[in-house]
Image 1 (tube, helix red, strand yellow):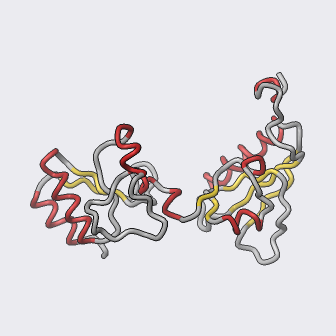
Image 2 (cartoon, rainbow, N blue to C red):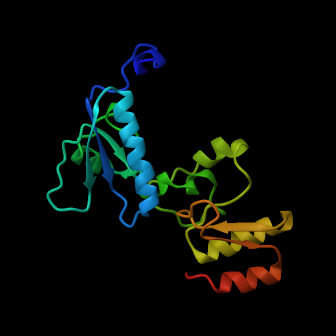
Length: 189
């Protein structure tokens, strides 16, 4: 069945070629292989061709890429425009205005109204989605991490996870006041 039939007669993209954009330095090889496979399959589905692998970190990398499949969320409109991405019709991925918007950190409120947060933080977003996520807080300082753990501990063990953590990586579980003191004392500020 042609892809247009699956999409209700609307072409997936106006592009006839697909490029893979490696925009996250240090990507693991097995991730790249999977993501390039997705780009190749998308090219087949649209009846186009897989054009190239582009390393965003290489000086002079070609910027007119056709339909772009990035290996990570692109941060900033200017970065997207550099790669020829002008709308959602130009990529299989996302573009965000600030790096933190591409992480799970947007899912939870700050621990307090006076808590520090990055530029662009939308204090109301977490409130709007509160019914869809587990209880928690997003923190941007060790002081607020301690405040958040203290607030959550009466409800049971607290999972502390880096916003950049994938799966179970980069997390610790704090189950008691003693562990709070021991574990949070060992984290980098």
